Image: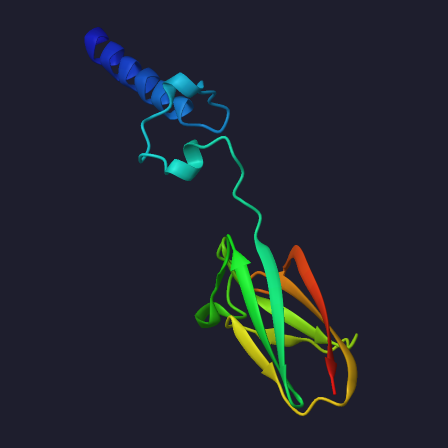
Length: 145
């Protein structure tokens, strides 16, 4: 009978020790961590991801302006426009002549038609799929004769 109580006590202590080891207060040093999936090259790099860039070129024909956007370190993703944020993807917000109304540009070219004669200004900003700014912009001025 004594042996039986000892075995039950030992089993209870072992179970308690195992459960306590999985609690939220458990401290593990980096060398004690379990192996994970192999990290990507980006995760191993000490460099932060390259900041996206944006440049626009305007070609005027009559009362139309064809705007060509060049981006680096970001992919314009029309299929994810207004969707969840995916790092390295996004779109452009285009503002014409200081308007507060934005044009959502999802491709590398956009055409403005039926512009009035005179000087026009454009401001383009890069945004995530869910419209958060990347804090990258470009401006351009052009003339319609």
